[in-house]
Image 1 (cartoon, helix red, strand yellow):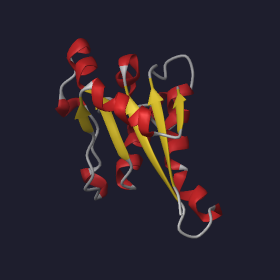
Image 2 (cartoon, helix red, strand yellow):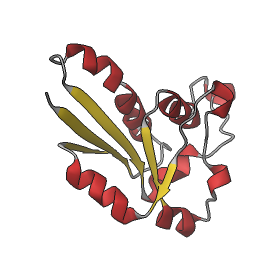
Image 3 (tube, one colour):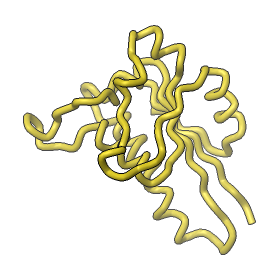
Image 4 (cartoon, helix red, strand yellow):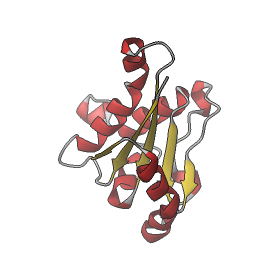
Length: 136
């Protein structure tokens, strides 16, 4: 029985590309991967937003109207809905003037999980404990 920890580190906004959205999609896919594991094995993903990466998850995105695509905010809400651990770097929130009420929540979808605002030291610890660290 093994618990495979994966850390998805979003360090860039989704503007001019889909890299950060791919991080959210890959983190969400852990539920699909578990059906392929041996009995008792698990995957524990952590999704972390640092630096400019947290600029793309603010509330109120309207990507569907002009672009016809789901926003990163909706992907982040889906992560919370499936109880994925989502972390946001406290120091970077202060640097960019982002407040906790600007972070998405999935209360309207019935989720109980919320984003965790933590110091960068805790995100470093998550990376150290992970078997796989993926940067986006």
